[in-house]
Image 1: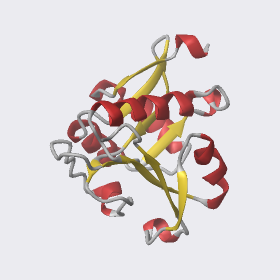
Image 2: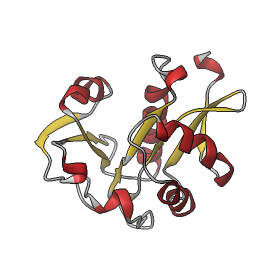
Image 3: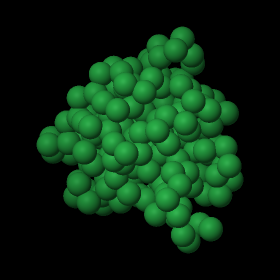
Image 4: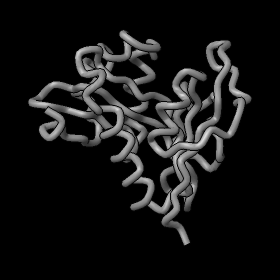
Length: 165
């Protein structure tokens, strides 16, 4: 199945499928997801297999090394800036697609975009139990995050683009 999965830029017609997946996870509001699809032109990706959306990965380009809380709700896509980081605000996989490598495919596609666009890297915050997963994907744990999002404890993880001069 993995070889049939296509990763592509999200479109508005994907919103219902994205919302269904999101409702299984952290439950980002539909209006915010719609706003992100419309504003994030290069870094809102979906994984699709035979017309079914299996998961998505999204986040704006920002100048900061670490993800800022405002990126979750107030999208300001700065993809026109030089360098910068892709700040991942959501990686969500449909329950039926978990364990199939969909997250890895999405992260690999985002790394390719980061390299093609000359980004310094990719950043995200995650809970402590997800740190090993992201370290396996090439991210480095850079310690506790200043994030106050949802009143949770978060860790800063960064994937550094080693292809920059």
